[in-house]
Length: 229
Image 1: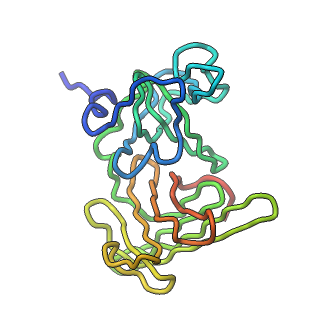
Image 2: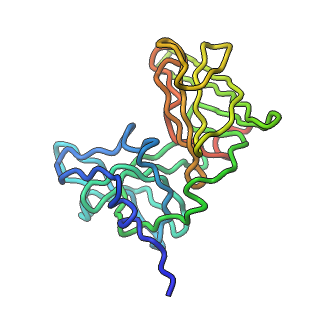
């Protein structure tokens, strides 16, 4: 009998399991290039679970911890840090917003192996005010990205450009704004960026030197969401 791997089994290897704590949070950095996995929602309806704060003991199965937002069977998330029976999960909405919340490990099933590291990179990827377009260029890929950070009237922007080939299921390069070089050859002030594919998502990390103050490409992106371009 063929049995699909459970997310619990996959997370048992390489995941950093934290003890349950009242200050458990799921946020930036909890889903990264080292722990990201694609997972499929199995219940007909599954609510996200709240972060902890001073007034609750989340994540837990209490109704106090249940958010209004929910996913349905077949939805795909990208998971990261595990906390007891819960895993930090990212989901990009049709509007291009990234939800980072806890989900029960028991409500998820690891996506098939061919969805963990898809080979299709090309397309227009979006989240919030960030866009990354990846297009074929000869035997390589042209990467062009724009990022925006805004608070009130303050707007800071950044961009990244490079023509690269994926190596070991990863796109990685550094750039001084004009020329792209292998990631390891980037200078201390150069923009350095890495990308991997997980399920329908593009997981990106940079070194926060790809634009103005607070600008970063670090996030989870999805194709076909957000503003029409």
